[in-house]
Length: 318
Image (cartoon, rainbow, N blue to C red; front, side, top):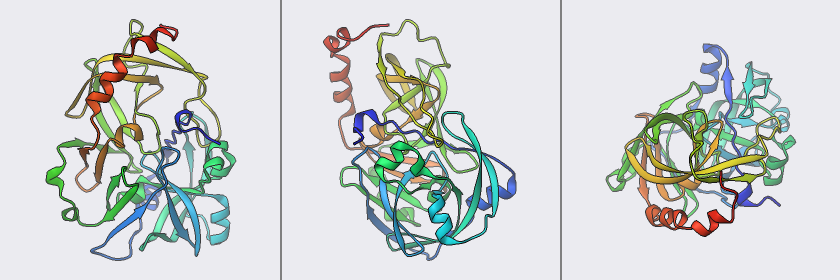
């Protein structure tokens, strides 16, 4: 069984290819207009896992803004379709391989039908963590960007619509501007102790905030080391066996001033589900905006963590 606190699954796929590949991945559409669909998601592992129907079979897919849509080799075989393209795919651990790119004729999420969706073919079940969670594929940013997506982490619901007016955005006090990669993964500019960094806004990351260890010298920061792999890539390669956790004096994400924070240092800057699940969240790719409405008292939770000096004393300080 996978323990939620130990799973920090990062699946950031970097696609290397040409314009025709980008058109394949970003093609397709929702089969109808003026829609609003609410679906449940499983959050047992700190990831949003949803039911997806392809070729009249129901599968479990991870909703992952840090990746494109992915289907397993078995789904690909069942569809009996020809590849539209192929590309080199590099995962979060720097491992790369050539993967087939296909166009899925129909993907059903709830009552919504997506036609002609571009997807990478990869056997996720070969990765231990994916297999334990029963993940057959990924609904990625390239597919999500065709709609507005609202995440309600308290009720474990996602609402998908083509009309932003279906949501009362006036009640969302914070907004984050983002820019995207070719696969529509959102990136948000932020600052750590006054130093700029670019965060991947990643629903495929179960953690809170990771900060790129290369952006500044954190040698004097108080912290501790946790042992064990913090992430796994598409090709089942884990990262280093230790992760450094430190207290930083100031952190800003877009226009959100978060003050002092406890963060993990890693190979890149990430915003994950442990941050998002303290909010209702709407993702708007048409305007490159993320709307956030705070649902938990983040300041109170942060203060309790920072005041736990006894916990820090029990751990090796760096």
